[in-house]
Image (cartoon, rainbow, N blue to C red; front, side):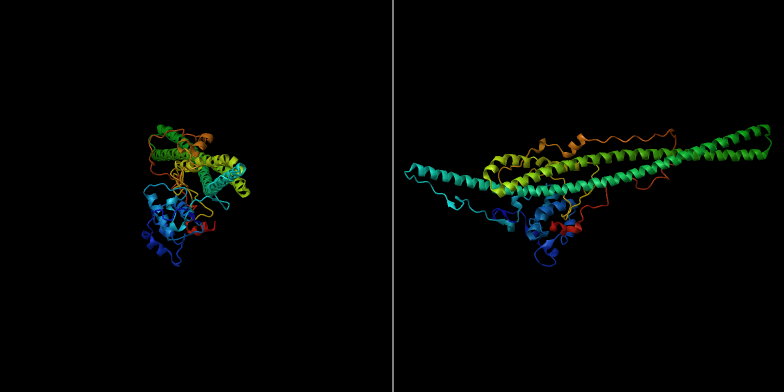
Length: 453
């Protein structure tokens, strides 16, 4: 689609800087490249896949999954700006629209519905003059209504884009919840395994205590016998042997006690991590519900706008204009601040977990600020005060906090020394509750899937 903008407006992108890379990726020499063609070039920039997905959606103006030289130069230009710390816009600013996608705006005229306005010349007939003035007023009203309709159509296009991005965000959050549930299940399994090991260690300790008691009893008997017959050499040797066995059993007892203490500490740590996972799941579920509710409101507003535009009911449109604009502006705080809640969570994965998209070649989640966005010249009808808007994550946290898990039992005995502090025979290597995952929700090889949306 072409957008109304003077083709002579300055375009800050230098296409010649990226022409060599474009020619290298354009293997079929048709003047266009797909996501698969430029996959390696974009990944080589070091930008995360979810950020690349957002940039692709901005520059793919025709939504066909193909980029020409200007669009390819634009995405590379946005990548360089992002590396310098500049925020990624929610929608493409007017000055960044490629020249080939612009059209010349028709000069304003006084033509409305095939009628050319002319200065009213008094005819001397008051009734005729009144009719002429009424006709001129109706023409002006009609032109203003047409302009409002054009503006509403443009606003509806922007909101449709926002709805699409919200759907992508909702899918991302759902995938994140699924991933966290998997991690929770794995942590519970690990906790059960540790509980089983504790039971086994407890039994081993009880058996060791019984053996120690038996050996102490035997030692006492040997002492009594040795007192009666101190000259019996064989008894002395057996007594020495028994003493060594007792010392060995005491050492084994200490080892088992140390191991038991280590596993108690591991269980406590796992319990705390599981509690954090549960809180994270609750926060994300609340945010997903909020986004879904706001999405429904936007759909209803868009349907009502379509009905009014199709019926060409100017009077009803003027009456309901403020209400519809208010409903559209209401979603702005959620759109602008939903990423802030996710970015501050310590359990978000390194690739923004679950960045899965159904039709986008990348995932669409970034920590971006859209406060500088201006879709049209003049005052933005959708502007909102971001400083007074709470983060959805903060709202979710304040509304629902899962109860903490009970603390595991503490060790009944404190061991003074730990001869095996560096070795845990029962621990599994790499048992940590990290938020990293091997699942990539954004498969960069499926660039062309975005083109089929």
